[in-house]
Amino acid sequence: MSSNTAAQIENTAHTEPEPLSLFSKDGHLMKPSWKDSIHQQRGELAHLLREPLSQLAERCAPVWGDCDALDAVLTDHFASIPHCTTLYCVGMNGTQICNNVGPAGIVPGHVGGDRSQRPYMQEAVPIWGFLLSNAYIGQNGHRPTLTALQVVCRDSLAVGYLGAAFDLRDLPVTAALYEEPGDWRQVKGDPAIRRTVFQQSRVESPLDGNLEAALSILEELLTERGVFQCQIHFSSSLATIWTLDDPLRYRILDHETLSDPDICLIYPSHPYPSDATIAPGEISRILNTLQALRLTDPTIYLRMASINIFNGMVSLTFSCDGSHYMPHDEFLAKDISFWF
Image 1 (spheres, rainbow, N blue to C red):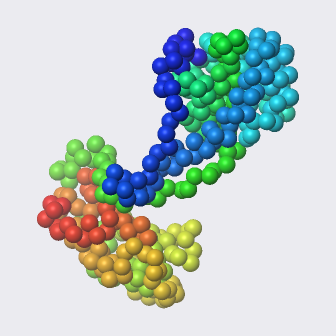
Image 2 (image 1 turned 120 degrees about the vertical axis):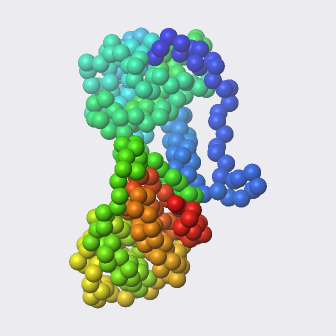
Image 3 (image 1 turned 180 degrees about the vertical axis):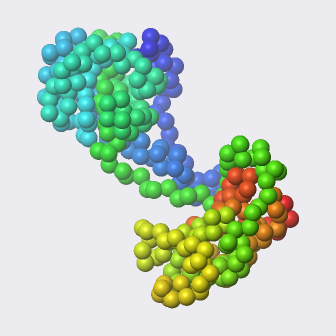
């Protein structure tokens, strides 16, 4: 670790971080974001690991500086650190002072190794002496990894760190999977495309020439035939669909397929899901608006769109390569003049 480690420890807040609140200022329960889920997961992992690492650090302190003795302590107590892949000890400068110890025992050849530039050694260690690092890509396995560091003290002075590495594959997942946010998001695309957008004009695709009929087929599939998500590639004249009966596989409907209403015979009738966010009567309104966004302006026009009846979201990618992710009700509230 860098030479200012002691200062990093001293300048860190003297209390452990408070858990994130899932309530807004007005008292309403907020949906957890992906950052909230990570915070909860890290908190539970820290709670699981802190005490056993602290106890092991106390066992290392009396033999600190004796490589063979440290190897023996880490080997004898390796099983006390749940889900661990590697244990080691480093001095305050980040130099390793013993070998690596893994599930199979001592892994020689690591004494004197410089860990000072590793990602976890660049993080500030809290005053309470335990750090659970941010995840990083491991140097050897090239897999997502995180490291826990526990300060080792002797005679009330910090002399180094006990390090424990964890492969994310081995760690339990206890936090609930976050929900995709339902707010409107705009994402800029390729700058090269944006710079030349006014130098181009929409070229009619085969789908454009039969767009009304193709969208009627998609409406039937979405409302009556168990399709819950579709992506419409206007410029490529195809659509990709996912069905409730086979949700892990997508199917591609090309221009010829989207010109033949008989395709609906292949997909059995399916009751419209009661837990869908988009009402069946709103599907046609969404598709009609997509058609207008595709055909109204020759320069700024829709290239791709998607609908997911459970997320309740509509995504739009325009000729300028800008993308929008919008709640369907907000999308329907905008008239065509808003976009152009």
